[in-house]
Length: 248
Image (cartoon, rainbow, N blue to C red; front, side, top):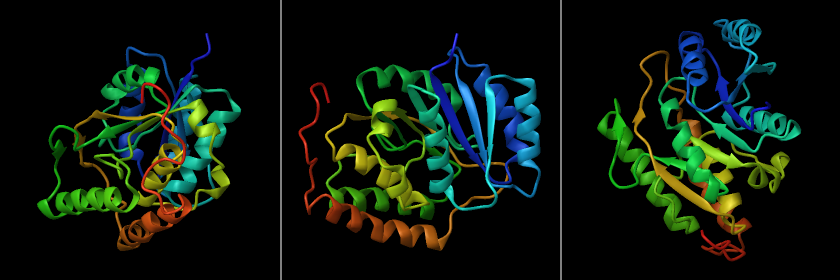
């Protein structure tokens, strides 16, 4: 029976994490497929992904020629998912900062939503292994996004998400321009401002123990100006252009 859920995991030098991540995802009580989008990792992540795909029919690999950023990797994965008819499409990090055990909760929430966001800050703060400076930066960014855009989202920069097919299909992915944390904000804003249903589920975020963070100053600055661009795109409104659907 074809599976209707796809987990997209972008990778760049995630060889140490990939095998245990695949085992964890495939061991879930819900049937899912997993798409590894590898940006020609020099550590051999792509080769390992091919080996895992050969061993498991639920694993697929999309190879890209080089490192072009998180946003481009996810948009390539989204296009791949839409072409193949998946109903539920996830974003998930490849370093175990997102817990695959939360996937069934996301799917339950998605029955009444177009986009489900994993929130580190809904009903408290649940972040492990972050220095205070990083936590304050993230909380400040979340407040900044809410003030500028009006989105009532507690964790707009989070990267653990589940999209319904209709939400992704409503977007022109070729017009998604951002790459880092601002990519997460842009995707959510484009869906929210249409009046589609967005909900948050609490998650515990555990920063990576293997490998190194992809955070950079460029990513932070991109996020700072992107929210103003989104506000202008929404006609200087801090609310959806259409009323939310019933049940939102």
